[in-house]
Amino acid sequence: MSSILVTDDLPYCPGCTHHHVTRQTAKALEKLGVSPQDVVLVTDIGCHGIADAVFATHTVHGLHGRSTALAAGIAMALPQGKKVVVFIGDGGATIGLQHILEAARMNVPLTVVVHNNYLYGMTGGQPSGLTPPDFRTVIAPEGTHLPHHNLCELVHEAGAAFAARVVGLGDFSPTLAQAFATDGFSLVEVLEMCTSYTPKLNPEFRLRRTAEAAGYALGTWPGPSRPAFRLAFGQTSASLSKTLKTVVRREKVPLPGRFGLLLAGSAGEGVQSAADSLARAGVAGGLHATKKGSYPVTVGVGFSAAEVLLSPEPIHYHGIGQPDAVVVTSQDGWHWVKPRLASLSSGTVWVDASLPPPETKARVEVRDFRKPFGAINAARCALATVMRETGVLPEPLIQLFDPAHRRS
Image (cartoon, rainbow, N blue to C red; front, side):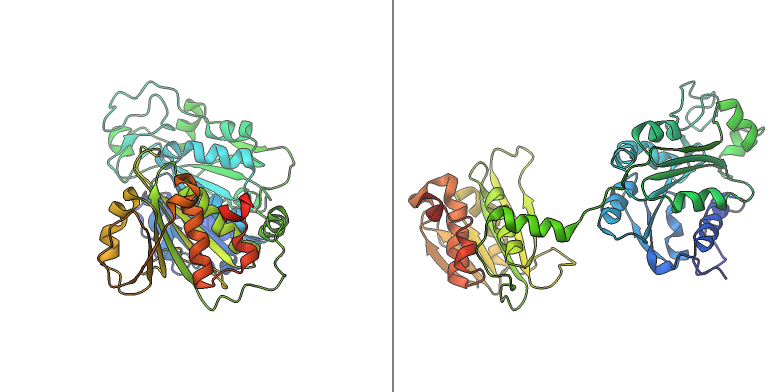
């Protein structure tokens, strides 16, 4: 039994070359001596995506074509020595082509393994952007007669540290191992065959012959040597504290647990920037923080809302079920948050004096947020008030975003 795979019984159709790609991937990782716990496999919609359950590694499954984007976020935050591997089909690679090119341009340390069987296998055998011109599919029985993307050339030109194209036959684990060992962005395109659709419309299909006729050159293309793109969170926090010029002592703010705040107001009144400032102030005080914004498609009209989480411990889920504090600064925000207020069973709601009292089981506090410093500063004024009254943040941190302090 492979140390990377939990079973030899793979879930693909009989004869599908996805079997071989999965086993060759496991073989390559084992050649490098990588522990399954040091590998994150990211997949998306497609036949390749059902591989999640057979890998002993960490796995993440995302939307069609978005696996590279998900993997990039994971890879940028992980330390060296961890391996992030993307499984994606030629259809997903077409949908997510911009994600792939941007990851190559940034040189994000991950490997994209493209299962190129020339069509959308899971959704009915339609052509993709990697389908050769004369390859026949269910909706193009005479071929598309359109040139296919040269994916390896595109990522190489974008700045990939390593690109390769192989036929999905024999032992190509050395090529995969070379890609996995690359400190930067790498891509391996594996040319395959879909046994469900290809033989029906292309009875003469042969992998090597079709690749050659389509101009799919095989080989490897090493890129320029440059640093991989990673996020240095420790340095970021230190520079943030310096930038904010906080006078808070270095020990953490004594927050006993997670504190979730929901801020609701109007577009154009600084709701998002106020929430950003609150999150930054929390980070400057040694807390972990997340911020999530909500607003309509029109962006500049209607409500604007933000959720901020502050915690002394790392935040692994940024959702807020029952907020500790709800802050409402305008009529737009009041209408948007009204259904949620009705479902509250705890916490405190701070509302501007211009608004009607909410129907809620939570405690209600009425304050004048809009008059003292105008609508544009109402959200900052409200957050400063709430932080003082709850004691979540100390005064020096509150002064970082308090409009009264900024004017003094």
